[in-house]
Length: 99
Length: 392
Image (cartoon, rainbow over all chains, first blue to last red; front, top):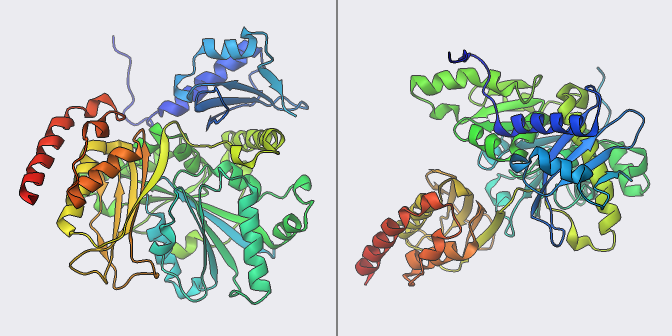
């Protein structure tokens, strides 16, 4: 049976849905409490050797500096694996404490 | 709530082609807005917008080519400081209100952060002056009912512009005629609540422009958790940028999506109106939604003293507007294009081919654009071949 689709429900937005999905992935991967604010933005990047667009995720824990995770791809293309790699994947410190 | 005894600053935002300059013109025509200073911010290497906004004697217009949000938060503070100094020294008319018309691609976060006074931002005389003389008194975002949904679906900046607003204005509602579109418009406020739960949403056709720019306290808290998060993250990124790029100002990070670029065409002599129309039509057909914006001032052979203003947004090209005279001493045609995934060269080739009859490698026009447009290639080529035969 098809699930009911409410014709009066507000339309969903691809970027907003993706942002919500990214926040959920980050909470799980970094083991954050549900009430910890996580912010997601898409910015262009001119760093040499980087793709020209990146997604930056900010983790805002109480009484701690904001931590940032950078994923070098457009927000719409970010995957759970890409975030996992940015957080845990290689020897470089990718989960940086904000200065 | 009592308002500060400082000069209110309003941001006027909205994605490319949503009608910001049109609204600004209407506001500035109101005598009660004579004492308004206007800062116009453009994304592009040739400034056009300041020519398109009516300027009364008491209006100060300043432009910046390159987005304020890209060029760092200090630019908006520097511009406000310059306005204050010029008025204080009697070099420019006094003003009691500032409207900043943001670039259609502008990211609100760095600009709103720039007007939030912070201890570490008050170290210089300029910053202390800006904090003591100005305050953020409102954020107005225009939402084009024709292309707005597509814009916020594809461009993160467009979504943020809606989220930051304390007034959202639905524009181009007068173009809606059929019942289905009218029904969609009626549902829009509910749809926009997903992005902004608290802003007042008004129809441009019914809104009192003066009320949009009446001072009120702008509350970040009321904009919701998402906006607060973006501002906090923006502050961290700005600090990182200052740290990393302190020794190299040219390497400031851009904030616009992949492939978005701006370029201009400048033409010295008046042109044939029919050929101009053909050029814009062909460009529109081939580029479609990749042509985010085209705007310009154009000289025509038939009436060289009366230029035309051209406006186009993605698939929609407005009729040219006739001016009685050139707004400044520069009589050249100046057109600015903001595109997504289209290089300047093919567009310039097309312009040369249609306006001057210069042969052009049209295949290049389509190569950077999405594959779905490739089908237009043969049609475009045959059309221009016919045109070339007629010209010869």
